Each structure stands twice: as structure tokens, then as C-alpha cells.
Amino acid sequence: MGTLRADEISNIIRERIEQYNREVKIVNTGTVLQVGDGIARIHGLDEVMAGELIEFEEGTIGIALNLESNNVGVVLMGDGLMIKEGSSVKATGRIAQIPVSEAFLGRVINALAKPIDGRGEISSSESRLIESPAPVIFHVFDLGSFGLASNYI
Image (cartoon, rainbow, N blue to C red):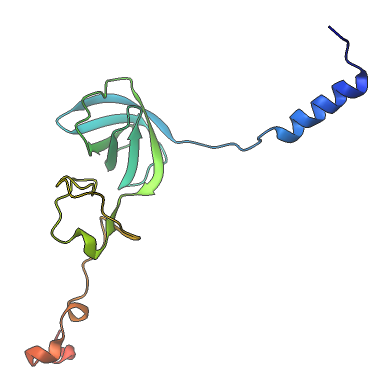
């Protein structure tokens, strides 16, 4: 086996330094205290927002709804059969949204807007917050057809 020269060693070190990924990602994590009946109590998640999507280590998604001082109540959006006390969770930083498009009309979907009717995927380029206000009535209907003026609404 040959020996390395000092300039070869310094070149190797420089290459490694240039390739080093300095990106630091801060993740808001917690631990499952209790799980049952579609609800999980989580310790941690100090920076979680109401309605934020929570990801459990086995893949189940939940929505943070009950924010208390020392724990968070999360509604499970799946069966959660593999979630156990002590499992880790992480906040996604995303508020619960649902895809929207005309393609959803007449389709059967689950709570996560995934099709369950066997007719294939549903394409959608837009999404809407689950907790969003309803459309204003006079944007939906042509009030003139009812003989109403908009100042009565």
C-alpha cells in the first residue's frame, strides 16, 4: 500500500469540505402518550398549530386539534393500529388541506381525499384549507334570477 503525500491529503480534505451538506433542519417532534378511539395524546410538539398535519413514525397522518399546555390531542386520519405509546411523531408545518377540482364530483374518497371507488387517481392542481369559510351566497347564485337585489343580503 502506498503512502499519501501531504498535498494529496489536503486535496482530499478540501473535496470533503466542499461536499459537506451544512443544511440544518429543525423538526418539531413529540412522543405518543396515549392512543385509542381515533385520538392520540402527544407530549411535545410545542410549536404545533391548530389544524396542522402530524405524521406518526409508522406513516399515519393526524390533525392537531386540541392544543393544551403539556400535550396535544390529535385526530387520526387512518386506522392507527400500529401506533403505540412511546412512538415518535413530527409536525409537518402544513395546515390540513384537501385537493379540489371538478374531477371529485361523483367520486368516493376517504378522509384524506384518496379515491376508494376503484376508478383510479383523481387529478387536482388546487387545494383548499379544510377549515375555510363557505363561499359567499351572492357569488354562488345569480340573484337577479330570484328577483332579489344584492342590498337585501
